[in-house]
Structure formats: structure tokens, C-alpha cells
Image (cartoon, rainbow over all chains, first blue to last red; front, side, top):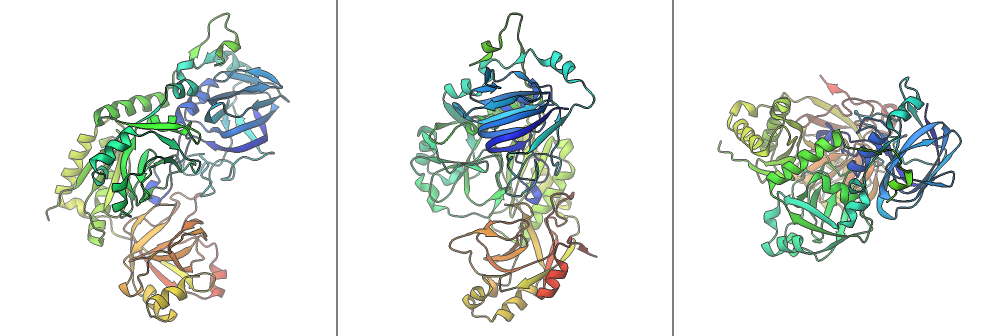
Length: 332
Length: 235
């Protein structure tokens, strides 16, 4: 049974695709910040796409307590097994006793480590996602710490058999975070319920200015820096209404906050725009200081984009390498 | 009753429905009725989740199964259909509270702001049956109302970093209960020892939007006796 010990982390939690169906009771959805990278990692190791896995900000080090298969996706980083460089976005065989070292992100900021098999974690309201503010899900509702052991059950399947069926899988470059980030970050939005609160000038400003991700960003929301939207100041607080990942709130200070995975279920600030779901994955990968822009999308197009994204999350495409392919060829 | 909801598509996967602009028990009752009506038809409509609030709700849908215009039409039909606006009968809950002291650090100040004695303030707070307008912000936070205008006090200027689980607060005409420890800006007048939110239970909180809640005063001895007891419906 695959088994890994956490040797070192900065901020890592167990996440899955999210906790749905309890928002009417105030329970946030949570789940992987960058769902595209999370489902890719799972499929690379033969797991269901929405399975729980490790989400890590910054470097993480794991030791295999028994033979295991893992895959690392998300931010561009350097990874090594016992000091030997290996590739991201590929299944990796970790022999018992070996140490997987994932370095700091070079491009992007969130890293996913999937472990082949069903990892043991606190399933709460149908999900293993860790919601640290509520102290539930994942491993004891808290971030991982050194000494934690992640165990995965293969349900009777032999690890060697699994390996022979998945070992050639990889995600081509254009499906990776680094590739997407290099195209520039443009968040496609549809107007929000309070678009009308903004003057046309301010709406134009929102769509033309370049914002930067502020350091006070976390799994709950990403704050943006940029010229304030003056017309939002008139509004103050509204009666609370349901909000979600991707909603662009403008508090009276006038600078936008994009709500993310651990977003509160209701909020009282004006929501002037809503980011289409796949683009919240991209934003998740933007460390503080990253320039981001907004672009308006028609609702019909937003529905098409979301439909395509939901299908991708359910069955992400991975490629198979051909003969003569070295694992370094998969390195970005 | 002429009622034209404002319906707005959001991000290609959600629809915002605002039934009225103001916060009132009557409008909120309609939100709940529409919430229960939509939730019971969710599967047929391609709706994945419905979240109600004070005067509005957000409907999440799968755009591979349905498009927002069909949902907007369904909402308008439901709103026109008067029988929809009969939510399920509310259930009742009694919540014991120790008022003041370390349990309710803002009680004295709140009472003096309104020119009341602490006892009068507590008597007024416990004399009403409140309706659960909504749950939200954090897991199991109960938005209850309306409080008697004589005990309405504004939020704190600066929110607290940590408000203990079970704390009972007031913000304007609303009284609220913190289901988990969290930051918070409501004026805290007391705390209940009973557990209202437990993530290991399903549902994690028995109180639903539209249910009724009444508070009653207990002493510290009873607090210790009731600590950790799960909240149960009053039959």
C-alpha cells in the first residue's frame, strides 16, 4: 500500500474537487485552488480525476514508507527523487525509502502531488477537502506537518500492474501551468449582479487596467492592487447574498477581490463581475505581484467555456509517450 | 401580489435571483419558498445547487444540461405560481445562553448604548421568537431576526480576530449565532454551550432557513452541564 511521510512543508493541505451541496448551511465549497492541475495529477497516477491529493504552496518533501506512485503538477518547479532530477506531469515510481523533493515554484505558485490509490483522510460532508478555518476535512482539518503519514489504498490492485498501465502518461506542455502563465493572465468575466453600481467609466477601467495580485491573498480570496473604482465607494454594504469562487467583489475601498476556493458562502459587498471557472485556476497560480487583466465575455460564450471546462475536469486528457521518449523530454 | 424577480446570469454557471431590494421577513419567506421549490426540482432543471440568502438566491447549474435562459423562465413561472410561496412548516429550536461577562463581552456596552439595564436588554432579547433568515458567511452562522428595535446596536467599529463558537451577537436588527470560531464584527452579548454545528453530522446543523429560534437565559452552572450537548428540535 502506497505510504508517504511528510518530511517538510510550507503550507500544504489535502484537497479534492470540492464540497458541494452544503452552501445553504454556510459551508464553503473549498477544494483544489487550481482544479485543472489537480485532476491532471490524479489521472496521471490512475486515480479518479476528483480524488483527494496534496496541494502545496512552496516546497514539500515526502519520504516513501513503502513503494508508491506519485505525480507532481501545477507550478513549474524542480523535483528530484533521492537527489536525481525527475519530470513534472509524469507518473513517478517512488521505491520504499526514497525521498521526493519538490522545490519552490519557479513559475506559478500551487503544486499538486497525487498519490496512486485512495488516500486516507477525513471525509466530511462528502469531501476530503481541508477547510482550515472550520477545522475539518483532510488530515484533522489542518495543514500537513512533518511526521504526517499519507496512506493510499489500491483496493487490491498490485502497484506494479498499475505502473505498467500508466507509466507512459504525461501532460504535454500546452496543458501545463507554465505554458498558460506565459500567455499572460487575462481573466474572462461576465458582468456581475451589481455591474450597474459602477459608472461606465469604472467598468471600462476594470476591463482596461492591469491589476497586480496583492500579498494578502489566500485560499479565501485574491486581492488585487490597482486604481480604485470610485463609483463602488457609494455603495457600502448590501444585504448579504450568496457568493462563490470567481465572484469579483468591490468593497468600498474600490479595489477588487476575486473570491477563491474557501470563499465565504455569502457576502455583502458589490459583485461587479464573475470570472469564468477555468480562469480561476489560472489566477490560483499567480503569486503576489503577477499582473492580471480582465476581459468581458458574453454569457453564451461563458456557458460554452464552463461546459468545456466541466467536461475536462471529469475526464482530463493525458497523452502517452511513444518509444524512445526519455523522461527528460517531458521537462519544461 | 405583483412580483417581478430580477434575474441575472453569472459567469456561465450561476443565476442570481433577487426577489426584492429590501430585507423583510415577508420577502425572506418568499426566498425560502422559492429555494425549496427549486431544490425539489433541481435534478429535472439541471440545477446543481441553490443557495438562499435574505432577499435573493443564487442558482448553480451545469451548462452542459441547461442554459441560464431556461432557468430564468423556470424561476419566473415558479414565482407566478402562488402555491410555490408556501415554504415547509418551520421547525422550532430553543437555545440556552449565558449572557454577559466573558461569555458576552459587549453586553454592558450594548445595554448602555440603548439606555437599558443589562437585565432589561436580556429580557428583550429572550422575549422574541426569531426567524432564521439565512445561514452563511461561515459554516452554520445563523442570521436571525428581527430583534426589537430597542436592542438594535451597530456592528463593532473594528471586528474581533476571534469570536468563540456559540457566541450570540447583535448587528442592527439582526441577532446571530457563530457556529464555529471565526473573526467577527457583531456585538457579542452571550454564548450558548450547546453545539449547533458539527461537521461530522449530516446535516451538520439541524436549523434550516425559515426555522424558528428562541433564546433563554441560563447560569454558568447550567452552561457547564450543557457544554457540548447537540442542539435538538423542540417538538
